[in-house]
Length: 483
Image 1 (cartoon, one colour):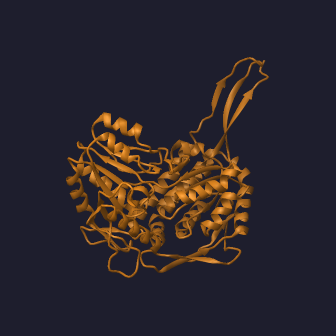
Image 2 (tube, helix red, strand yellow):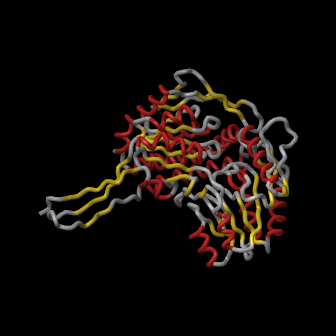
Image 3 (cartoon, helix red, strand yellow):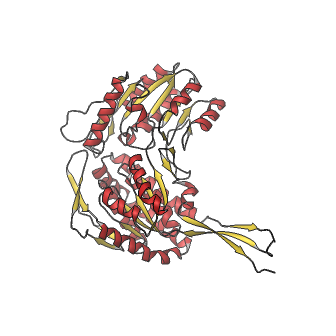
């Protein structure tokens, strides 16, 4: 599958003619190639977006929303084709890929509709300088960069591009170098829906080149980045001194607290999905589970039974029932790091309950999902982001102690608690250092609620009305001369 970059409504190669091969992580076969952009391409894309901005910013919001709704229609109509491309480049099972496409369409519709409901405000003012009143108005920022990772290329494209376009901005999107094909396919649908030339541009290439150039470009007003904490710090070091509007959605090591009165079956089901969906490659997920000692054995037994049904393999092929297909992790290097984290967790005193093998196939970056009981508090499994299908499960007895352990991490993205005790729920919501807390629910990023973390999990919010706010400048207007 050969693909080109979208710049100003044209599909172009890189000026250097260099390409990046796209490899299916399940088969290790090349499934396509995309241009490897350089500074000339970035300058062209940004200049094109800058020229398109004034016209798009003046477009009626209802018109912009209508185009986005049309794009969502086309995404839904082409869902199976998009899912096939996503599975080929990312590796996730087709069913999961379809879910991601549906999430993308839902998000595009949400932001389209929400943008039409944004209101300014009227403010009464003191009459010290004569009769006057104040207005608060919103103005789009200009050119926005959307930099997305490999784990959920389409979902995370939507949470950046849709609110930016809905609020009147233009966009240069940069997908991960290993998963650009589905993003380019979606960009074609946006163009077909009527997004004017230059309003949405997609350039491909390596983050160390294209990402740096976008973040540091003087004509890019807003940067929305999702990726690792280490790269997020680099983004801030480049864009911060230029006083850009920056949001960073970074790593996570979400704690789950399962109390003695929890619905164990429901908690197990939620943790199973929340940890092992997308082969555990999610910033938001159930990554450290603390279970009350009274129900610990039952929880581990039920979870192990479910985890044992996973069958890692090619995402285009269903597993034999009752097994469930799990795709590969994305690269060999990623799997190697996961195996090192697993080994460290066991050396720290943890017990491997299930999983951890790499299978018999000599092709594909597969890893059998694992549960590790009671790894050490300072082990890599507990202190680092584990970006794959490995889950530490630990017992606790006192709630004060488990809250302290839940917060013993550099990260603060998501968290959850399973209990019917309102006092414990209140304490968890107030005392866990995280941007989000789920109560008797699995970890899931709703478009309707602000999404973002604290500490090393980043800054700023995506999703919700807060996402729209982050793509506009608030301007105060004083109306005088009224006497």
